[in-house]
Amino acid sequence: MIALFIAAALAAQSPPTEPAWTWSLYADAVPVVLANEVPDTARLRATLECDPGTSVARLTLYGGAAMAGMARITAGEASSIAEAAAAPAGASKFALRTDHPVFAAFTVDGRMTIVVGDQRRPVEVPAAHLAKLRRFAELCSG
Image (cartoon, rainbow, N blue to C red; front, side, top):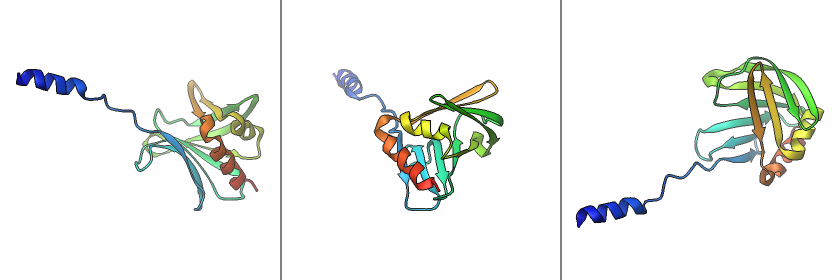
């Protein structure tokens, strides 16, 4: 009887849920940050940072192998070349001008792809968070 109760209790347990990844805009500080994160944790997939009015966004990608060298960045029909720098803990850093057609295309549909050698990393901001991306671009632009 006890074994049956334990089996029923284990079967009723729900499977662990996936972390709640989201895009958060931190616009009240310098630098302005748009982060793809699990809130209230140190878990990050990507951050975009800028000093207001500079028109330069610094993109950091976390996880995966670090990327270094020349990167081809595409969004929509636009493309650009930027230098990729490896950062601590396997992160990769890039600088993008917010007034470049690539960044403008990124703000339209939230999709950008970065390729360095044979490494390819997509950055996707879902439609529900595009207003945050656009506000980030507005705050960063000079």
